[in-house]
Length: 96
Image (cartoon, rainbow, N blue to C red; front, side, top):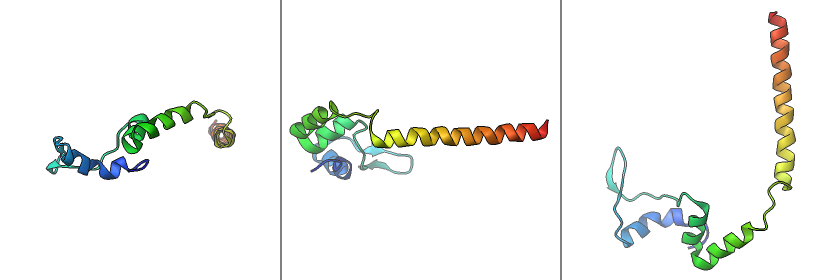
């Protein structure tokens, strides 16, 4: 199957294991492609037990706070908030 392929094969798996069809407003009794709604369940469903355990193991060594994307995005958000706040203060000063 491979990682992130569970969603593409969800309808076939539901039919294979005789699970009840999904119901939506327009059509009833249709098998829809759905994801597992949980990263851990998605990893286990897509890659079996070994892949799911590898996903759990690799997550223990992830460092989100010192990741380069986070380090670059936080100052950009701060800069944008300061620009917006400065414009709002100018607007209020003009009205007063």
